[in-house]
Image 1 (tube, rainbow, N blue to C red):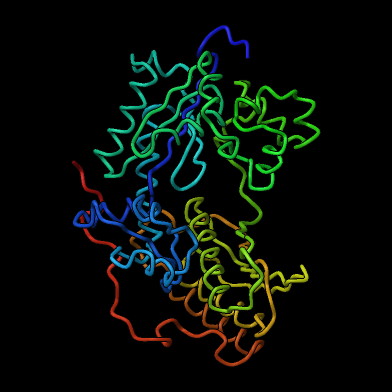
Image 2: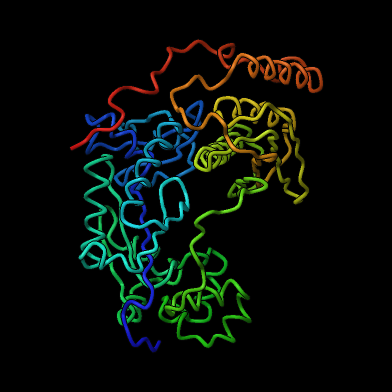
Length: 407
């Protein structure tokens, strides 16, 4: 690295700490300081958790019965994605006070173009980062961690260094020393198999990675590796996507971890993928008209089914459709190795502006009923049923005033 100045480019990465759990604590302050796990629809699996629950071994996607064995005294709360979307919008509105150029990378993290911002605020980058953290906590009630450096990848790694509620600033001349302390597996884009390859080649740290000849990185990892090499060396490659194009689909898929025929276990994975798909739909203000579910067999053959529905991003509706498809394509005694959920035929959510409005109009209810009847006719009676026909539950209050607690 041969940087002649510290801030030839400046990018911040803001990452909310334990976002879903932190959102719940804004309206359940009595639970602060206690372990909290957020559960998917029908409370099948863990989709988020506080740091103390993570420390004891609870993982995202873990079936709830396993999580309760590890930490029976934890508080297990049902997810409320509309509420989390509201908190996310408030957080990003605060970030836009500091810079007009924001990329909403996900519901709980974003990148901020910090070039020229120091003179506007008459503060150092550390001062601005600390100010962002305080403002978000005071006005929203959640904590965020901030990393600022010369590229997206460096700022993202930096934001992980002082979690929770910390600031890490890496100017150009400090990049090399910073990377000496970063394990190669902590580089975004270096997954399990790539991590093992790096270790075989004695590339233990991000510093080792940046000092490996670029030609060798290209041979091992291709363009992905070349882009990472440049970003880690402080050479910006990835620009902020200020107005990302509408995606053609949103898919969440993963291996089951092992080959299994356990229907309940596979169902928890399907529910987790559904949770992630709907979260992304809500975050991007989109609805889907086609929902697909697939299962990959031990033989690597894939089976699947898709269903056309009235455009929606309502969690209960999509989850209900997914469960119906899953029950239709699953076969007892057959072993599976992976699964996934895909949303397609995407379009903007015209009802996005009012999170408190009734999610469906009467006409849409009628359309949904027709879709359910069509599915039941095609796949068998009672493949899909109204949620309230499955079991009687005490209605859960999803929104309570005040939504945001100012401190």
